[in-house]
Image (cartoon, rainbow, N blue to C red; front, side, top):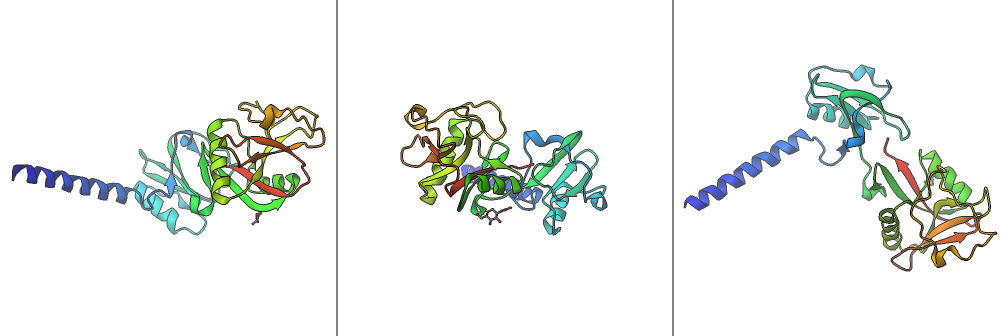
Length: 236
Ligand SMILES: *[C@@H]1O[C@H](CO)[C@@H](O)[C@H](O)[C@H]1NC(C)=O
């Protein structure tokens, strides 16, 4: 009897907690704040009208949900202030202690896979590397830079899931033969060439990740050949 009542009080407590958590987040899982967004504040945008005092975090999120173009908000616990934003990828947040930015996340159902503080999209319309690059750029991103095995594994998973044989990644030696670069020109990092890259084909200046072995090795590829591609899009 005693045991039963202890169990049921614990259950009751759990229910209360869950209810409170849910009411604190108007749309569970849709908006997210993460450590790179701590103490950041977006430059003034189309949002001044929405600066309101004395509002809870849940109310702030609720306003963003109802607002037609709101894709994020920032909130200060100490001032109970809420600002709604239309956040475009590439908008650089600036430091402002005390505010947190919450971003409306795209979902996997919409084809956006979270990696680090960005999204990965497998684009399923074939085009040349130049056009693919343009499309990713228009979305605020670039062709993907695969600097870790973890990201390579994610791309492999997406290829398998969509039953796609290979897709462009952002590696190219079109500028200088034999000098492979990612779109941002930064450090190469993780390398995953098929045959250890020993083909050294001078006529193939782009690269694809292949679906065939779990290692999902990369192969040189003719840049003009239309192919699927991976975009990498920053969340902010
Ligand atoms: C990118 O390509 C997709 C088709 O794969 C298309 O729906 C979309 O409009 C393109 N985006 C841009 C910004 O060009």
